Image (cartoon, rainbow, N blue to C red; front, side, top):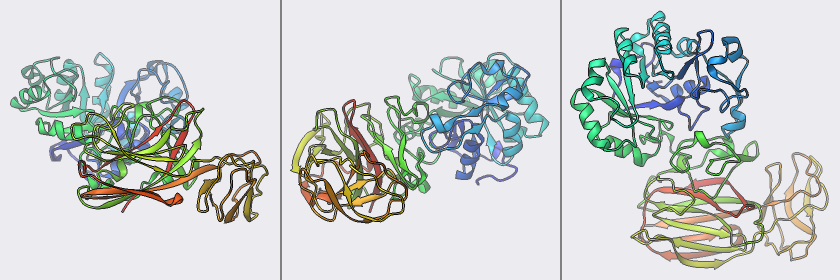
Length: 524
């Protein structure tokens, strides 16, 4: 961990990265799991946490004024007693989207006693009036941690209280016009937290820095935005992505981690470049959930392009590399078989689009009818244009006509009459996460599928739909690329060097029914 015991505000290096709510794209926000997870990543400063007072005067970490969004309970935070808060669970297994165990609601005392002095803590006083801020000051002073804490508040009157206690104050500004720079300095602030979307951002930053203030932008998750605020003169950021946003490439991998982890990793974002606040499986624009089985989790895709952050940006994007993409076609469209699953690649930035194509790069789309189509953005980004079509086998969804017993090896699968033919080498995913590979052609109308030997790890009942797994490779070079549907033996090559960006997005070009998920993404 960066900064061990005795971490002090005065020792912080800049640009500073503060883990917002503990790094809420990676961990369930405002939990000890988040704060300790951020510390384990090496974060020097952690927003721990958004603090409010209970009815009996305890400080608890909760962003909203109610407990409804992030816990299994309901009601105003201020109406709970400390014992009442202790009975709540942060039900992140329901709302975070990954396979997390539920967590307790931490008190500020818990946070200070577990992490105080090992990293710089940056709590926020969430309520109006001085009571919450005074309670924060008292808790910090009681442990002698004044030099290891930055306290933030939107209330200029709180800043003087914090400074008088010998604690570093951070004044939060939404628009940059709540107070003059001179007034902020006069109140005793050392830092300002400025909304990255504030009007005339660079000018506001310059004015604050001119009077000696350190300026931190909030909330900055995309690398594109991090570059912009640092270029504007900021001294750091609040971010839900403490490694990804500032390009600490310790996060980057050549193999997506979600199939094993079953949870979110670095840079897995959706429009408008966020993750945690929309992580509801039923909400369009969310970024989950994970489906499948332990060790074989699949990221369920949606109509909004998903940034495949753990592998981005590709290390040698202008050179040669190969993307290995697997997609599972989980549920067919209602009627339109031109719906598709696919990937954008060669994208120039990590800006997350809203239900539309990326403005740069290429798109490989495999439709349910088997059409493998490649698109490219013109250099002026006026809209994706088809570059070519390759005919492959249509996606099929066999349904078992008989059950499979756990632990009993099989070399064939009984199915209802096949609606389309399937080739030897085509693959299908069982609910156990195991993959059945066809060892022979299955004709249209076939009622049995010959497969490479497989022993189900659990019983699979009759009537179970088998989801087709397809493997696509995209081999990129400086002058073009080739696209192959490996499981079908089809490929095509394209000569085009318009785009050489390193960002990859995944998408399900669905109707209201079709479902597609991603069990594997690799870069080689």
